[in-house]
Length: 284
Image (cartoon, rainbow, N blue to C red):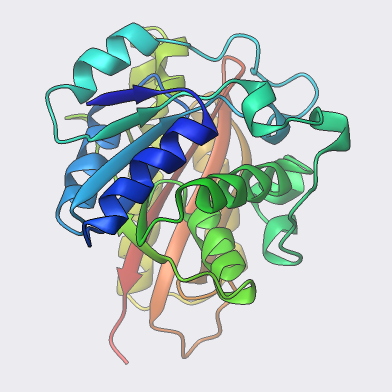
């Protein structure tokens, strides 16, 4: 596994691979890697000859008062984990390498509409930070495929829209959400929770599963179902930002005839923001 910090070095490495006719997959991360990240790396290896993993804690996707400063930086541990899966290059740029003119003067890439709803409503500017950094990573690596996790479902939809609108020749691949034995979606931010809080946090997934069961049973009053689900999460001691039933293809509000749905939730516990989602196919 090559360890690379500069754009120049990464591009020269990628050029040699492409000259040999090989394909490249990119797995962008912010580090503090867990089993879910490693599953994305393994998935990437199935779709390309070479895998690049980036670790970069991107300041532009954190809002005021969010956890940028305390976000875990665990590069040494992450490197050891990546050495146990198939990674050809680990790209760990500095902030100056990604934003050479400084954050305040950086070009911003924004996907309107999709970026303003759900998580975007509660984290203004977050998705512009995501699309701005991912577009840079795409331009640096020019990957054939890029792999992202389903847990960040809205992020995946925003990035897919960006790829389509900018005519980028990159195929996005979705990796399934890895869960703890109790159903809690794996997340780097789970490390901020103690054992009791982690147990409490499982109410998010249990609530989404109950919501899915209600929809399978024929209930279609989405606003009533969403309100009941949010109340259930709140009763467990969390502060819900939202629970939403949306069309899986575009995050639009569904109607009674919609069959391919995604159920999404975001809630805060002990100052930690947690998200999760469940995909649901209903009979036509």
